[in-house]
Length: 256
Length: 256
Image 1 (cartoon, one colour):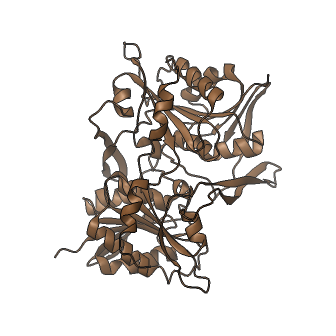
Image 2 (spheres, each protein chain N blue to C red):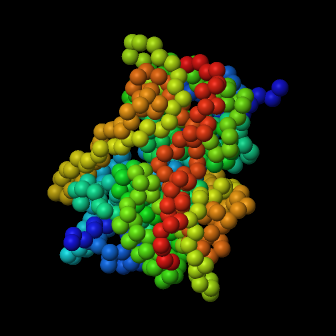
Image 3 (tube, rainbow over the protein chains, first blue to last red):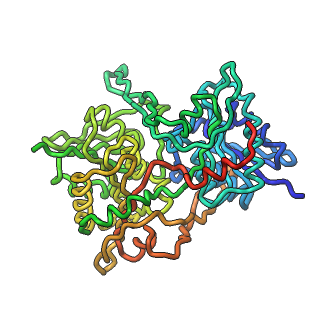
């Protein structure tokens, strides 16, 4: 039986501990092609490189395992992996493990999830994994079981067209994982401000900083799950249409 | 009566003809603050700048009209406009006019629409305008009527939390606009490949290129509307949860 072909990427860069752990967890499931950014691309959203040429750098070439770094974004990595390296569609795309949560609206800022959404756009089953710990030294040792379990299931059953998965994993703080919850994207926002500073030439500059505020009261959302020691799985769709609001706009008396 | 305060941005950069036209169309409706990128930021998706400090440059300071360029992305521009310049929420955010369509899945790649989605995240009513013409010399002269009409209506009634508008305007090709259609995001994809070249040092490099393929057969989608001379309005939501698929995943026998 032919082994499945799995494309791996991330947004923290090819040397990040998160992707190194993910690669080791995924390799037993199939042949693996890694195409990941040569430098961190966090908070890059669904950026695509069109102003500078893209380059690939072959790092590892073993039977069943090839690894490339790329000067582009996570979305670029998926496109290059499929069009230039695999020259076809992989059976699965996995992205991560992100250093930091991609729960709630963070899915829209995340380069890790942009790679996954790119897969959904092409109807390739795709899963993003994120650990709720921003540190380089984060402990990923409890992530292998859910990675293998979800990836195996998706390899077996596929995903509907235009749908991908956003898996967020809590940090181990002495207690074991409470379980797995299939949730919805939490309604939340970043309460942000800018740290306003002056450079040595007395010119102003700004650093974004902020605090995450969850507006949900229930337990059926990803932010709650993550903060209560559950692994969260949210199915994400690429159709952003607010279908329920179409009727209202149709009643507006607009002129064009 | 206090005039509404309107924040304007785009992704083609502050000097692009599209935003210059949009500013003139919007100014009669209220006080205007422009914060736009100092260089083109197309295809930047929902990128946010966290690695380099952000800077603002005041260009125009007139009663009821201030204009700043920024070294960041469209999403950065919205955040800086609100937190540093306005120091509060505007009554409306408008973004564009984008040089090129943001119909269908392009909404996910678009910096213009990222600024609008940023507004929806903060529950500020926000509208993106795009013209289906990539050229710098594009003719925007027929865009004023729909801009004023939609912006006035949204200033009057607001938008539901977490919902924004994606307005795409067809090119005038000798015939008048056929009308306005409230549509859904077309199911479609980019059939892409890379133009593979060698640099003078014989190293490979790649340029992304592609063709847009619409999978829809009906007339209720934005791509059809735009290509049949209609102005398209799609309500866009920031909740990406595929709610209809949650039940299925709950039945999976996963281990974590």
